[in-house]
Length: 78
Image (cartoon, rainbow, N blue to C red; front, top):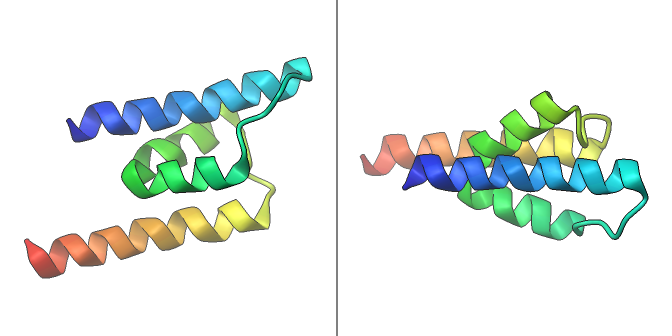
């Protein structure tokens, strides 16, 4: 299940990159960051694979912060 969610989030980042390249309607940044809460590893992979949002400071801070938070939560509650 977790793998599927991360794969979907990665594809979401890829879809937004494709839309950006084609000048189409974009996926809002709030949606991309919100999706990262559920699939942060997919979001990070999508940023790297598709070279998407890698220059945006908001994403360069938010994605690692979400990742660290989730790792801490897993360590505390596992």
